[in-house]
Structures are given as structure tokens and as C-alpha cells.
Length: 139
Length: 163
Image (cartoon, one colour):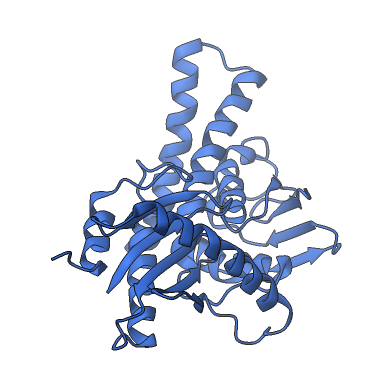
């Protein structure tokens, strides 16, 4: 399960970021921020080379010593970033995909909420609880 | 069958509500107020377009380029909203697109010919907003205008604003 989940707007500012408590929050913000360069690189590369297999899921962005960072970009260029613990080796690619899919579905619901202003930070409770379900339960 | 007309009815009521609202607050309606109404409807469409495109593109692969996005608007988006595809898409490959619909759903209830030609823009403002909202959420800022020359057919001109 994830230790940090972030939603980043088209213009690369955070719409939503949540990490497990009791750990250094700033470190996660930093990790997510650094991942944006890799996301950018993947998007522009995908435009040229892999014209056929244009997927929203970007795969593993980069591994660090302690964490693995996965990325996903919607057609509206909103980025989702999920950080998982490297020690958690049982986590498969499929599970990560399904987490992103859930995240995307939930974000779509937020976008279609008439009380939500596109571009504002996400404050939806439904979104919040969905994210909580995907986070590591801090023991 | 019944669910097909719901949007049509809602749209009709929306247009008449917005116009009535403006009229009752000011009395006479002049060209300035008409512009206000059009921009209100356009704004409503814009927000809806943003939400709609977010939902529709959820399962589609990412777009290759601008033309790819326009094709999506003409086919999938149009089918979902207006139950038919755009009949003709033309472009100058420099950011200008003309979308022609020979039997535009929101105009089919108005009698053909010249009788209601002046009223037609009212019923197109919302759709212009829809298209602009959808494109804006896909990352293309645009200006969308519509024109009618012969009743049930209409043309939307989309001009992409290059940064």
C-alpha cells in the first residue's frame, strides 16, 4: 500500500497531497516534486516514439533507496503520483494500476461535482476516504 | 426514447430562464443584455464541458495531437451529447477548425427556413461553451463561435489560441 498519494494540476501545482503521518512529510513533498520532471519527460517522449501504445499509466518513474514512485497522467494532463515503500516487494504492477484507476475514477467524480471549482485544491470527503483506503495503515 | 429528449427540454428551459431573468431585472432587452445572456449560457456550458470531457476520456488512450482531440470531440463527444456525429470537419492545419452539423439536435425543434434565424444564436451559446470547456480541459485554449445560415444545419468555428 502507498505511503504517499498526490494529485498535481495541469500547471504543476498540487491539488491534493497526502502522506502517512508520523513520517517526515516534507520529504514526500520533495519526492513528488522531483518526480514531475520524470513525468514531463515521459509525456513528451510518448508523444513522439510510442505513438501506438499511448497509455495513461506511466509506470515506475524512479526508485529511490526507500521508495518507489509511480506516475499516471490523465487526458486533461492532471498527474497522479503514488509513492510506495520499496520493502513492500509483494506489490504487483497490476495492483498499482488498479490503484490509479480508482484514483482516476474518484477524481472524475470530484471534477463533475458542480460545487468544485476546477483548479482548486481537492477537499472532497469521498475522495479523502478513498485515498485513506489505499494508504498504509500506520500502526 | 424518453431520455433522449430530457436534455433538449432542459436546454430549452435553461435558455428561456436565463433570458427571462435578464429581462425581468432590467425591463427592455437590448443588444447589450443579449450579450450578457449569451455569456451566461456559454459559461454554464464551459463548466459542464470540462466535467464531461474528464469523464469521457477516462478510458481512452492519451491523444496524439490537436487533430486527434478534435476528432474525439466530433465523434465520441458529439455522439454522447447530441446523439450523432459531426458531419464535416475542416481545418486549415493552423489551429482553425470548422465543425459542420447538418441536423443540429438543439435546432431541430425550430421550424426550418428563415423565420427564427434571429433566435438561433440563443440556442447555440451553451453548445459553444461545451466545446470550449472540453478543449480547455484537454489543454487547448480556444475561441468557439457558431453560425447558422440554413436552419437545422449549423457551423461551429473553433480557433485554437496559440501561446
